Length: 314
Ligand SMILES: [Zn+2]
Image (cartoon, rainbow, N blue to C red; front, side):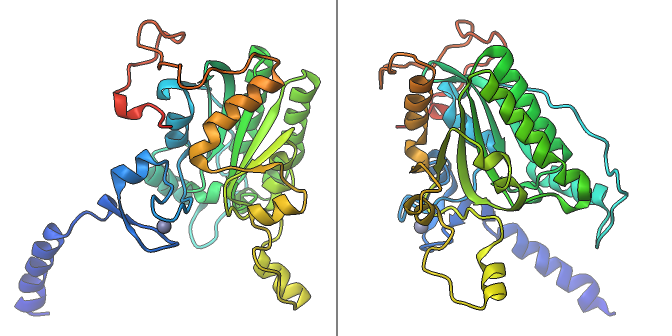
């Protein structure tokens, strides 16, 4: 240690780090490498404006674009026991949770909300891949049950956006128990005669694909989304064979009868409005004639007026 390492180097570092452009202002597309300005990218729902590559989108951002005027009411989800197995890998499970909460600003890996799309009342649930890989633990199970109960109570369709690496290994068998639990929740909707629509986003894998993500009345996927139980690398290593091009991707699954549609994120809202209205026996929505609800006039009194840029784009 001398004065160079103690004094000069920290000073130089601080000068350079201050001048650096914050990296979140520009986002590089993983597919075509184009640098995209963050605001432009957010306006286009995290879809590359150059090549149409669909990047991750948080549930909150998605709901802002999905619901009329970006207004929705969150449905509260019962909090399960924290760290029931006292699990520890390289880090303790509670530490991993804290880090994920800090990173995303969310409590857990799923957001449930009620609101209207094209004046059609719905309940929506969306999984957050940025929160521990969207892994399905007890909270996600509770969230799906809360969403199904809310939908039955309000007699509304449920739209679920899936995105997950599978079950949450830190919760062991308790996370696997969410598969039958959520299956029963979906059954509640079917018994009530309410539509359950699943939008499979990149990636939807493991126990999530093996339960609630594949039990919908209608299955829509975003372009090029990986949807599978075991991933292509695992299969390739097991069968020692080269897999066909585009295997387990949305378009491949559509061709092989696993999906009903593959729809671009920017066109999803209109399509969901059409499908939900059709399944609920409502007259078709009038397109382009739906001003966003205003504060005070809105059906939800606690809703706040949103600036114009938050309104869903066509
Ligand atoms: Zn791109």
